[in-house]
Every structure is written in structure tokens, then in C-alpha cells.
Length: 125
Length: 374
Image 1 (cartoon, each protein chain N blue to C red):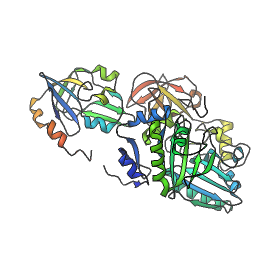
Image 2: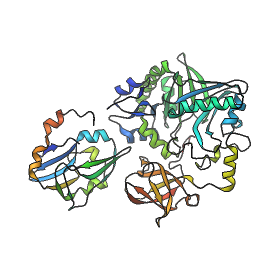
Image 3: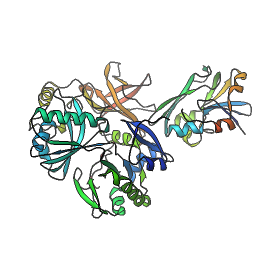
């Protein structure tokens, strides 16, 4: 079972079998509506916490996706680039953005637990 | 979310249907509905039927013996092309050829007309109409009755079935750009065979206090026919595919009727305000022309203001409206191009969030209109 941790801008960091993936929450996907294009970073690139690492485009809007922690891209989800609708169908699973290496483990404790994220008041975003 | 927009008469209905609401032209409007989304709503209109709340649109009435002469003077299209019960797409040109607004003018008879105008331009249009009426001494009685009326559209190949199921007898939209005044279950409805989607369909104008009732009647009757509510998001993608201009994006006070590639709306056999400027442009040629482009391959959408370049990087124009096309599965846009580049298939590049994507000039509409039965 993967463990999901979130930041306030609705990205997640998931940990499963010692591997980390990043993506955006179910709530974020619902807010964006139909996703038509996803732009992913290059493998090997590094991002500081809070830096945009990808963009998501829905029919009406373009949104930046921010790094939840300092991270290096190990590999990206090529399937998602080819089929952006995967994000609408399965944001926490097949709609992940990239496998990453967490560069500063201490930042993980700053993220919001799955339970707290679900309970969070998300209006005003 | 903070919403200062004026709530329309059907606001509660939209909320109950799960609408995502945004502010547009000062009105709180549904942009899409939960569980559907822009793409599903768009495809419903292309393949079945969708219902739209367009109550934000304006209705301005003209009455008097000189109404015909006055409207022939302020509008560029020629009213002689239509008769009583006919309506027409037309523009309100400025003396320099720019566009005050684009609108539909409806002829009840030669001394009684009304216009359906863009929500964002209601006050501006009304002032313009009054000013020209005074300047020319026409003495037409002009009334802005936008708050009194609601407009509901049913669009898509199943539109007639929806209206028939709701109890309208003998309705069809075989004659686009005509309208009838109807008594439907004792409520007066103006039923117009018009739309903004390129599909067969109707626009229904009723007094605002009957809007909730009419909306429910149509929605209920249409349910077995898979009629769904459609928000502003799909309205925009549908009109873009259909190659129809959006005022504020593709048209404004500085774009002339000739530049907007709307010469077909100009009645050259009559005098009207702005004619001289437009005639000069016709003789000398325009410096830019509204045209379409299709982005090649996978990319994001070119948005309003994005630059268009030639394959060798020279300036070619600017995007005015751009979106993913749900029907075509590619990104399309309206853009002002240098006229010599406005040729089907002309290779171009377009800026998409700072990067250049290959594109090809495309003559609108991107999706053929299907106003007539196959």
C-alpha cells in the first residue's frame, strides 16, 4: 500500500516499497476538469521545494505543478504525456507524474498526512 | 471562491446540478457541471443535445416608423436580406470601421425589431444605439430590456426531439435564422432557430419569471434523450470549432469588420455608418486578417495574445482565441495574420507558453456547420 503525503498546493508525494512518486491530488484534478495536456520535466533535473516542475493544461486553464520537497527526477510517466486523460481517471495511480529521489528527507515531515489533507478546508484556493 | 457576479435567474438550478461557477461579464455563470466536464458537454452538443442558460445576454428593442431606416444606418448587414420573422448576424461598426459589438437583429416587422447582444456590451451598445438615434434625428424608441428576459438555448442534432418531448408542437429548425412567437403552455416564448455552436438548435427567449419553469420543462423532457446542461466552457470550445467570433477576443473597437474577415456581413448596396472606412480597406487591402490555425502534434493550447511566426521566425500575427478542440482532438486558434499568410495549409509557428510549436493556417470553421438535415 502506498502512503500519500500532500502539500497545501495539492501535490502529493507517495512512498511505496522505498520508491517515491509525485503527482496531484484527486481534489486538484476535480478542480481542473478535463486534462488535455501534461508537460513533464526531463529525467535528471532537480527542483527545490515549491518550484514548478510540470504544467497541466485543462480545456480552460493552465496550472503549474510544484515540487512538494527538494527532489531529483529519476524517470517520468511517459504514458501520462501520451494520454493526459489518465490524470482524470486515476490521479493517485496511473496518473502519477514522475518517480523522484527525495533530496532532503527532513522535509517529508512538513507534508500533510492523507487524513489531514482530506479533512483540510480547501476552499479559497 | 469569492463571487461578486450578479446571480442569474437560474442560479439555484445550476448549483443543484453541480455547476462550477465563475464570474463572466459581471455575471455568475456555470462554466461546467460536476460529473460531466467541458469535453462531455461539448460532445453532447455535437452528437445529441445540450441546454444552455444564456440569460446574461442582452435584449434591446427598437420601435417606430423609422426603425428600419435607423437600423440600416447603424448596422452593416442589409436588413433587406430578411423579412418579418427573420433574424440576421450583423455588426455595429464605428465610423473608423472598428466594431462596437456583434449581435443578432430580429425583425418582427419593419417598425419593430430587437437585438440580442453580448452580455459584456449591454450598456455600451445601448448608449451607442441611443447616441446614433439622436445624432441622426431618427426618433426611434429604444429600450434596454435585458433584465426582463432570459435566454435558454437547446443545441445539437436532437434539439427538435427535445422540444417535441417537452410539448412544443410542430417545431423544426429547418430554416436557420428564423423565429416564431409561440404560446407554450400559456407562456409566451420567442423560438429562434439560431445558435453559437454550428449545430441545429434553438434559442428560446422568455420573460425572466418563466425561465426556471421553462428550464425544468426542457431538462426533464430531454433527460430520456440524454440532454445535459452545458456551461460556458463548452460554449466557448463549440463556437471556436464552428469558427464563430467572440467579442472581446476576436473582435473589438479596434478590429475592423474587414480585418475580422466578416465582409460577408457587409451590405455594400446600402449606406451605413463606417462604410467609407471599410470601403477604403476593401480597395487598399487590410494589414491583418482573422484566420484559423491548427497546432501540429501534441502541445498545450495557444492562448489569447500568443505570437504567431513564420517557419523562419518572422512575425506573422497574434492569437485571439485558442483552445483544445474536443471534437478534433487537437489545439486550434483564431489569429490575426498578415493577409498573404492567411492561406489554408500555410506553415506557421505559434507560441505556447514561451515555446514555439509548429502549426498550419486553417480556414475556419474547424468543424463544418450542420444546420441542415443530412
